Length: 345
Image 1: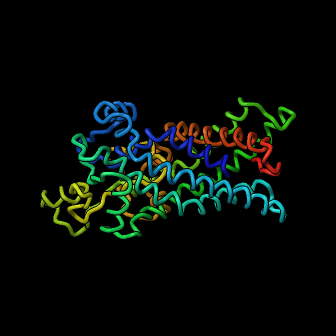
Image 2: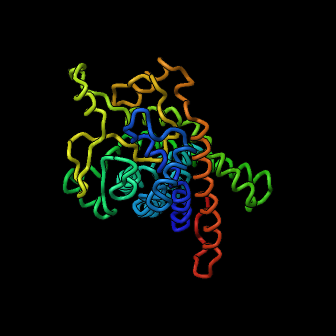
Image 3: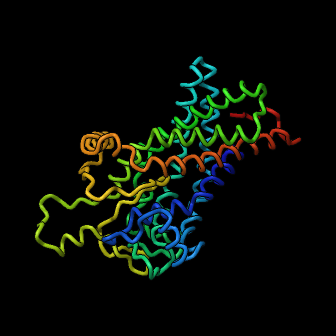
């Protein structure tokens, strides 16, 4: 569990700046958007706001959620995997089901931290003169207190269902692929220690392939959580009302929104594209209905928009997490205080 916590946290922190760029892209209220491509947005945030308060804003709740979340994940994964295999479940199905169960258990911890993280990422520095996000928290603690006071404790679990729809299938597929690739690698090498090169290859390809296969869920989740659809009975001729419906809430210095409208922000791993101009409005909160609408109007290409960047992100994050996990696990098992019964993937 400790090795998993360190490995998972390292992977998340390594990719945090990319996650910040994603959040700014999804929450950008400007027309035309201020944040467009990944590279230009990265440079702009770094130039205007710096590294710590810009690209790495929200890193404190990210760390506080990632470490215990991955501890829970790997603990539940190993326990579930062993139990299912012991009762006769086929290995591949056991790996798939264990990844699903483990992510569900960890979500209770990481979803609230993601809500705090994304709001602070979108805000950037306190009283940010470069970007009006609708949030203005002084710190992680101030953000937590303000959200609970003004919006209720349930607001910390905003986007919970949508997060599970994408992350549970991703985790299940990622570990099913990883376990199988590890077995193939050990058979190919002829020993348990497959070497660093094969460790990196199996970890990155498992995460990348899982990211590619869940890309349609990523596309629909991004559309649902970032598009703002005004009510059907709203007066279309009233420009001022239309403008207020698409702008994010404006926060006071205390962090309290001055309006009740909330811009939907993704609260999980980065969605790596912005919906193309003219993309169909889903007008639904159902992931399955959204999938059918995107496929019907944009075809298979629309369902896999942004698959390249998503492959890169999931490959790097998974590679970092799983390689460090295996390396630390071997070190802990070799420690004199270790019982020698530690589990290895």
